[in-house]
Each structure stands twice: as structure tokens, then as C-alpha cells.
Length: 189
Image (cartoon, rainbow, N blue to C red; front, side, top):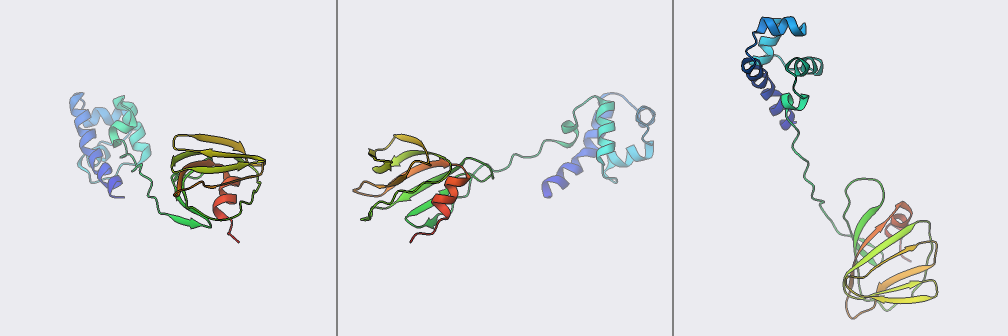
């Protein structure tokens, strides 16, 4: 809100500057726009807040884009504030802040001594190994992947993945809503 208030406060001086640069009087601008001279004076002095209707009329009269009068908004902070969450075997960090698909996650999978259980679900998945060694079971195929290797597959094929040791494996994973629900929302047994 402070940014909006600051930008609105800057409108009056910009309007006055544009009018002066063009050598236009308040009465001439009033005649050209249909806005009273007193309203224009109050806009320029900041004693009246500009409405969208007034701004559109004045930007047309001065032949400048609207954002020249109100300024462009500051770009939003693009950083995603990652907080780790534990989901069964995985620790996950959401890397996408906006809703929609696909969603990106960083996953950390520890070394485990468990029997792999393959699962299926709707969707498509893409993964990239950042560090460690990944064991990926896809149907009856067993793969070991290292840093810099990527895989993509239809998740209707039975699959499982985990650390191939000796330490944890760190992955970047992209998946749609079905994959996100299956991997990050399901409770471990």
C-alpha cells in the first residue's frame, strides 16, 4: 500500500510538469479534456486524488502512456522462500510459488534399507540429479543415475526411486498436480 500511496502522490507533480513542458494553461487543458480548471489545479497540487477516469483522460490529452503518469510498479521479489517439509521418505522444498502446473521441487532422499514398492498414478514426471546417486525403478528396469543426469517418464508406469548410496541423493523434480499429490501428499505407511 505504501508503494501505491507514494506513486499517487507523485501524479500531481508529473501532471504539472507535463502541462508546463507543453506550454499549456490550466484553462486550455480544461477546455481540451472537459475537466474543470479547479479540478486540474487540485490534482496538480495533490489536494485531490486522481481517479482512473481522470488519468486516462489526461494521458490521452498529453499523449503519454498511463504508466508515465502513475509510474510502473516495483517488480515483485522473485525469490521463492523455501521451507523444507518432510513427506514420508522425502524432504521437499517447493521451488515454485505460483499455482499451476508443472510444480518444481527439490527433493532430498536419505539412504534407506527398505524394499522398493513401485506405484503408479496419473501424470508425467521429470527429475534431475543434483548430487548423490539415484536408484530409479521403472517397470522391470533398474537404473542408477548420477549428478547431471535427467529422466522423464509417464507415471502410469510402475515406478520407485531412492538413494543408491553411499549418501543421500538430491534431485530437482517437475510434476503436474497428480504427481505432486502422489509423491508429496501421500502418507507413508
